[in-house]
Image 1 (cartoon, rainbow, N blue to C red):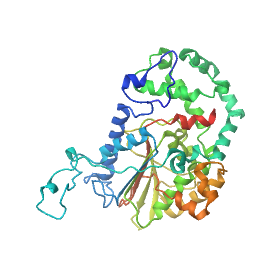
Image 2 (cartoon, helix red, strand yellow):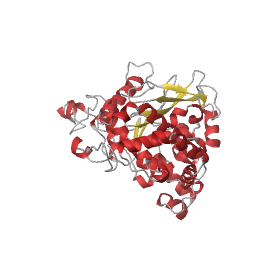
Image 3 (cartoon, rainbow, N blue to C red):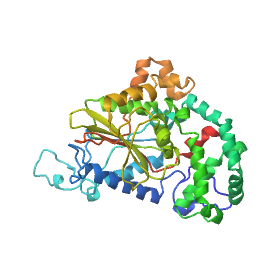
Image 4 (cartoon, rainbow, N blue to C red):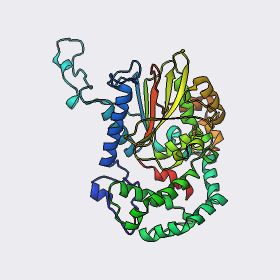
Length: 409
């Protein structure tokens, strides 16, 4: 669902009335697609018959093996729940209801929840304190770079080049543009939501969608690249990933429900957008980016990046060429050396000049050690190995245009 009451003037849709949902909720289509994504992940990593099943993983929720984390927004929490229904099939949620000691207690033989549905805990923190999954939105250093883009020659030339189409888009939609096209991203998002639900009736827009989408994607790539996002944008996420890979008490599966902007920023901080520009484009619903931890046949560990372009897509391996790894399977020691140098800052709050933000209050009021520990949370990666030992995934079944474009206003 759109996250604001704004509508397209010449093609307004009252989503709350039409869909019987509140603004910001995950639509039925979004829930269905996320559930299908859960099926795809299950088939590859959890199904006992899968050749790529994670070593030792169980097909039902087990707190020592699975970890789920979401941003604190209804649509991302609903996305994670929808995915969990695909991961844990009906009938896997067998739990004793009453007497655990009595082997003959019939409470052991029934499901605690209807149809054996599996309940899972989804962890979160308040949106304004989420440096892990939304750090790029709260980092002044990154936001300053984004603002510089608006006055850059490249930005001005880009909009000059596409001015005829953009002005036509404004005219056809009735959109009131802000100076320097400051709110064009909101229009792009509204059009995407309506079109994905077959509710966009402006003929010219539908007929020229590929052109419009190309303009939007190249506009986004000016923002979501390493020069703008830098180390700081996803530092806490990547730092936590490294911590999990180094941990002796690893989860088998770590999953993050986040936003399109989270995917774009993570790709930028890992320099993936240098090699694969499409990772800076607008992700499709249910898109995901994962880092797989492999246990190689010689006993060493290696990392592989895989990408799914949408909810029902199979994984496509990527190379971290610009980061410094020229092979598909990057040795863990080499991967950690590269991300420490290029994708992680030692002190995120200070690197972001965040002394006035609540998210960094602990850094400036307490010791650096206390602040560092407070930031240590799990990260998104898929873990796949010759003998798969760890899996983690970051995905987006929802838009986050408020996060993506507010810094451009």
